[in-house]
Length: 442
Image 1 (cartoon, helix red, strand yellow):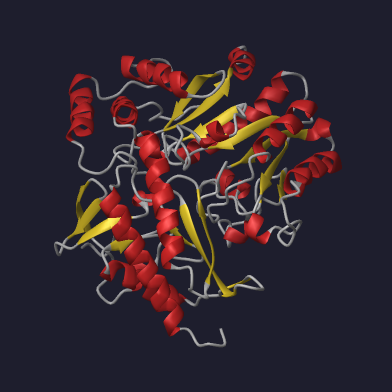
Image 2: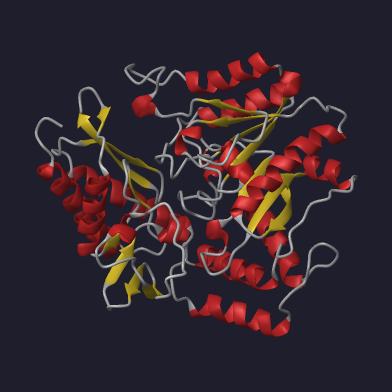
């Protein structure tokens, strides 16, 4: 392997292994193979992107056919039929009147685009003081400057780089297990939603442009909100004329057991950010879906915004193929069913494990939160060598996962019952082994 290749990513454990980084050479279904012929169940879906599975000849054929027919068409002043078809297909599955779609190269660029559109929407309507955007703790909105600025500062995405984009404010996320408002109470009080309302009042409703949130933060810990949370956000934003922006880069296209996580709560956002699973990892593509009133206002103005590879024909062809597969193979239902099987299997296997505080999730997003003590819920603080050992234990058992606290499992939507059971067995064994290695005092 060339020494000039620079690695980056959320999962660094592989880079610290004596054998060097994992070199993946093949994939099929929910599994990938390394250069030594060892198979792994990919419980991180690449980086949350693989939905319809690896090695689909129909997706590869769609990309190949499109590249032979037309390899490029810039959306700056032209379009391709496949981009038009994709926009129509997205409009058919998106909730409510999210009928207009701006295609961009990646989910991170979709975050930037949504931030610009939200502010420009108010500017075009004569409300030029509306610049503030409210984000949440535990948020991860991408690695670009705008995405990093909107992400929880504790994630360190701007460490050593500089100050975030101005006008970003943070409020608590719905995190029932550790809620600063009601974790010790008998029921959720929705004080986390009230914190959004308080932030708006503090800044002044006439200065707030948008509230941006992931319906279920993935890298932030798979934080599933109470059912009343998103309808409450929708009502708060409607009352004050503020745009509600849902970042569904991770949660979209079946991951949570519905087409979009927003569908669970029938709370249609004004802007929806899309990416990752839209093309199943076969190509790079992102999008911002807009409700009709947003698109109509922005359409009346010249927007100096666009990317060279927005709506690339090959990427659109991959997306259309993946959307068809999700629909025809019922993968949203499978995500719901196998996600429930995964959670329940882990709960049974780890019921007596003293370092497991909570197992939670929605669809094929599952987190195992580790604690020092179940009674106090003190987080288990793992050193780098602990994380390395857990990652290696999982690899030895043929599983790739997001290894941190919590340990996160997010396999492709095509995972089978047998594979789900294998994942339960491997993940539970790795967590139990970690617990056995830790000193009793920890």
